[in-house]
Every structure is written in C-alpha cells, then in structure tokens.
Length: 83
Image 1 (cartoon, one colour):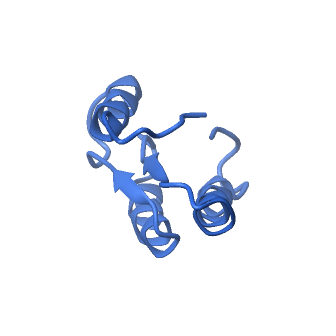
Image 2: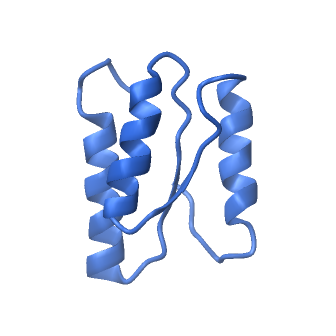
C-alpha cells in the first residue's frame, strides 16, 4: 500500500486484513515497510495484530525492498496469496 502521509494506509490495511480474515476465512500477513515514520511500523504491528494478521517487520533501518522480501520469505509455505 502506498500513498501520501496521513492518508489512512495503515488503517485501510488493517481493515482489509480483518475483512479478508473474517469474511473469507483467509490467513492474512502484512509486512511493515515504512522507512520514514517509525510510528507507522508500530501502528501496523498493533492494528494488524488486532485484525488477526501476522505482521512481519524489521524496524525502520535498511532498505524497503529488503523488508518486502522478509515478509515474502516469512509467509512462504503458508499458501498465502499476495497482492
């Protein structure tokens, strides 16, 4: 998910995760990739967990592409669809 700061990306991600888990019985995982705002990572950990999603994160150090890779690797073998 990408967009302007403060546009509701984290909230929308959590709502989508909750919807997919509840309405479709899907296993949901999200990866926190924000490099600019450490609070966004903490927020995604909190709301993603509340939504029943598995959250992959590595803080705010390093490259965003590596964070996505960690999320993808963490979900391997779990038969998750990515979007």
